[in-house]
Amino acid sequence: MPTGAVHQLSLTPAGEGDFEALLALRMSAMRESLERAGRFDPERVRERLSRGFNPAHTRHILRDGELVGFVVVIPRDQDLLLDHLYIHPSAQGEGIGAWVMRRVLAEADVRSMPVYVTALKHSDATRFYERHGFVLQAEGEWDLYFRRPAHPASDHD
Image (cartoon, rainbow, N blue to C red):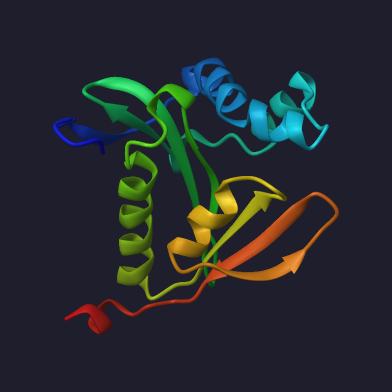
C-alpha cells in the first residue's frame, strides 16, 4: 500500500444475490487484459463466472468496508483451486491482492495442500503468481496453468 495509506482490509462471505456485483467487478478487472488478447466479450465473461459461481467458496474483499474485489478458492480432494482473484482497477497497486494471496496460501499451508491457478497469457497476473511461489505447469492456447507446491504448516515454525 502507498506510504501513509492505512486501510482496513477484510474478507467476508458472498451470498447468492451477489452475482451481478461480482460480475461487474470481474469485467472491470479483466477488461484491459482481455482486450489486449483480443478476447473481451461480455457474454463470455458472464458465462465463465456463472458456470462455477458458488457463494460458499466466494469471499468479498473489502477495503474500509467497500467491495473492491473477490476471491474464490475451491477445495478439491488433493489440492485447492484458486478459481478467481480480482481486484477492481481503482484498488489495484495497493497490495490488496498480495494480502489476499497470503491468506489463501496460509489456508493451503494449514492443509498441506498445493494450490492451482489459471492466468490469461500476457496478463500482469503471471508475475503476481510467480512472486507468490507459483510455478508454470502447462500452457494452453489462451491460458497459463500454475501450481504452488504444498508447504506444510510445520515448515513455518
